[in-house]
Length: 340
Ligand code: FES
Ligand SMILES: [Fe+2]
Image 1 (tube, rainbow, N blue to C red):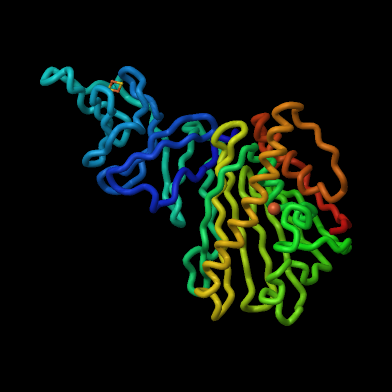
Image 2: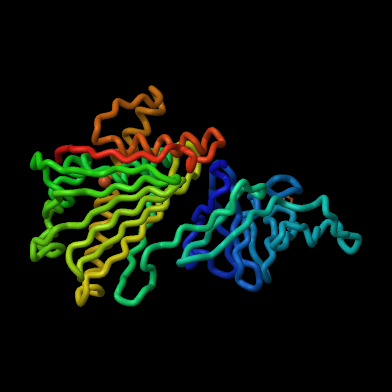
């Protein structure tokens, strides 16, 4: 198994309009992405075979991509179908073919997979309750100057919230919390206990009756985190993030906040968007600082019991980096006490 076996978001469906081409970076590979005539997304290596200009600087006409340097035209499979300088003597040839990657479109996202030689056939992650009646989704995109491992760890890390997001998300009260952390089948599942309303300035709205909070965090290999809060029937929230490795220290994160706040669903939208963006910008800043320090001194972490989630996440991502199957790691379940 390798990172290239998985599907990664490269664009929102809405971003890829007909007759446009987008430039993307994925696991260090450059991609030119456009739509074929039937609307299907096409992903080619972003490099013209002729004199190596970038195809993403070109233009799309009737579902084919024309390089902006000497006008070579590529079809949806990467085949060169016209070379202006060859005039009528042009002949198509199997040799002239740009590298082409598999694409899929699901839940309003366009996905690309880089590997064509697969150890396993994965599927894009299914975004919880996306476009289901009674649910609203607010979608935001942010770039982090850090790697995927540190991003996903941040998204399911409680202890930082009182420091990075004071007041807005959680206030430091030295409250004792318990969590059960489980590693199984390439995933990390965390269930929290004893959590009462300490969700910053909108706890009143989220948990007006002060009922018990159901909170779980999940990591799914190789790059997905899902945070779920449930406080009664009409206060149910999922924050799902897909962290896309652009390069070793640049990660583009697509976050869906999908919620069911009953009659407040529509009214809450601008408020949910503002809050999500505000919180994520605080994480962008701290992860940028961490990324810089790691670039200088390398990664050398000092774990506490509260970091058990991260240790499990790292064990899974390290296994993939070694080409192994993380599903074969032993099933482990740990009960941890910590304070926030
Ligand atoms: S470099 Fe693309 S056509 Fe010449
Ligand atoms: Fe955070």
